[in-house]
Length: 352
Image (cartoon, rainbow, N blue to C red):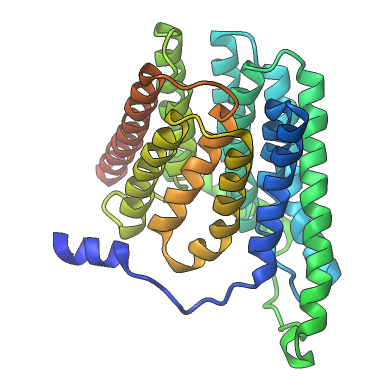
């Protein structure tokens, strides 16, 4: 694909997927309300911590039944809960925290090869692990942080379930009929397939790329602790995908969208918006997320990155040095992902 065609495809707007309004509304309310309430009480950092818990539960659709929606919520909340507990326990130990992060992320990446749902759970675990470690490093009361995250996740789940009831009542009966699903593989078949995959290098390629990128990110953070380089690991967690995609359109969309989103959010924070403005901005970005994900992945990435950034850095003043550090960290993270993909592709293509 030529450069112009590649860019045109990256910017192409899709209209084929329908998005229910409840996904955006529950995400917006779930993430904005904790921040606005905390801002009114003069404790914006508490609202941001709760909103981090809301992030993982936001965007879950109504499904065809309450049971289906509850199952989907459980599937996204479970890995996030494990990641939160692990992150709180691992944080605050300097270079050892970075080493624990690499070990836990690699373990999740390896176990994720078991099935497609496990792939999604592993990627959620890794992303939320990186986010919560960054939050916990700046939080003295880590037990309180766990409670705030749980409260935010619970609040968003309740909003999502209530809106799901309204959505399902408005649908025509035909729209809620469950479609027949193809027969899934048994647990024994999944385990056998997963075990076979681990006997070849290809079965370890995601784990190795993730460990390489997060290891370098942790090393750089240890070498230059005076700089704000936690965004390197965050960029890796956002950009690195299980399948290697060097020059694919989606890779371009993720990288360009993340860079633009970080720049936009950094400039927004540089003007030191009022706490209520921060809450409204978080709600707007959260509400757009589910819709943009179905329309254009570049736009989705440009919303996802600043949403995470506002949760991490929205509670304090921002100076030019932090802005420069964050932009450089984003570029370094993107370069690490590109290098890991290129190296692994070359290794896999080399004849045994």
